[in-house]
Image (cartoon, rainbow, N blue to C red; front, side, top):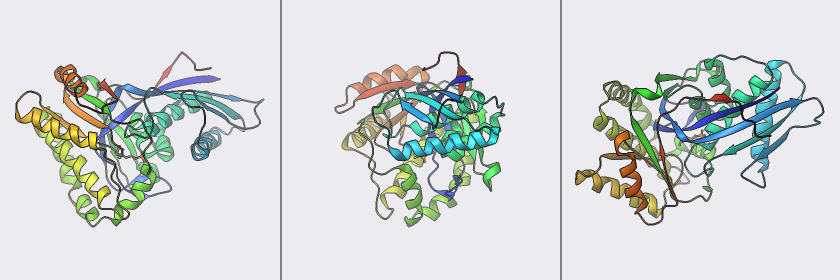
Length: 328
Ligand code: PMV
């Protein structure tokens, strides 16, 4: 059976940065995100008795790194074991945005793979089971399974660390206007970054403030209080990057253009022209969070800043879905 799934990337308002258990990707803290309408992966999977090994193709890339291939093969093995199958699979996948620049390509990619591969083997997993499974392949992939605004509950062990929808996509009209600063891949992967986090002298302090920060953010989301929400989002991004910058060795994901955008956002806010807030994942890309009604304005402002490669408006959207158009 051939199945194809489409899954969104997601932007974290509260970041996952450090694992409680590296092997199972159980995180140190809960995180909160929004699924992105216009940055997504599509993945087609077919298990086939004539294959002697897994066959994996990325439509947008000529070569696949051996670690990437190993990660996808491990995921397929795990799903095959759950279904009690011995068949190998053909996998074709594509992203509509550049990888490893601070947009969660492993989140959308592994969420789409999880849904397509389980369905291709006739499994009908619940949303919770899909989220648990996707987490084991890429932590943030668990947040691309449920709809809209999502919380990943860290849990205490492998089988209770998964993501749930807090609000459906239509709940709140906000936008993430993504400013891609460079499509070059970052040098240090987020997997390595998670492992370095505890070397920062500020790491324990970050974790100590986390529960209160999450409770406040959720309250402002419930109240749709955009200003208070935005302040926490920006503060949290700086907090996570403070950990990165003070890790040993230090990780500075920003480019000069990243800072230029951060400075502009503050100016737009101070002048009353545009109320928006930045957040940045593990890369140079800036996510500009604004009211949905301001999204076009934010895009046109960003396009005037030097050094920006691409600006994409994203609205909140559903999580991973099956689609009928296959990639092969
Ligand atoms: O899933 P990973 O290992 O790529 O982790 C990335 C984590 C951040 O994007 C930096 C933050 C987050 O919660 O998305």
